[in-house]
Length: 290
Image (cartoon, rainbow, N blue to C red; front, side, top):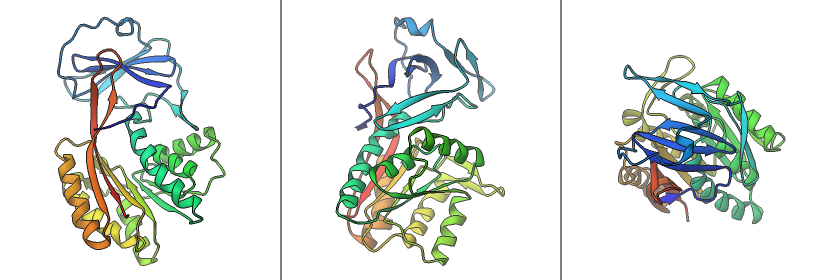
């Protein structure tokens, strides 16, 4: 498992009864987590004295209950600073486990950039820009694409907070599949691609995305805009049906057969302070072209 264990401003304090107790900088949140199927004693004081609690509804969805929590605050990871704000469906605007992937591809970008090469990275389904900013900070030119205008605006806020507002980042509100199709027609090329697709989603004009049906054809499509010797390709999955072995097979089939290179896939996770467990947070597939 790849573990995001370099955080200072974020911490999973404990897990029990379908929930996780988290520290986001100085604030304590309790949020549901489908992986937490065990019941253990909730002995930490944070379980009773949290700043925010997301309650899952038996009818689907849920709602936040706040206790002295600001509308927005910040959290930092190395040189990056992110603006957090609780919003619908338990999210805060950041997936901390992805730091394990940021560290991995940042090293690859940094090495290539230090050798004097321009590194063009395409970040698809780019959300609030965690991977975009990590790649830019490492020295890449980044194209950030997300179908949500609000998410792209949020990502720009994070860039400003991270002092990367002048970094070579292209911000686009667009349907990711249609954008890639246009890039193929324009003969655009990228050294690396990051994609963090949702399990289900809709584009700006109602385009439907179902990950089990759409992910492999889209990975194949994306190979048409990679350079002849790609640096890396990263695909993330929060869908339990897409196990690491499935990600490996897709990347091997779509990329290794075409470009050579190597694929590794694994679960990603976060350490739990109270009990020493590692909380699984999905899976990632990593292709490297060397």
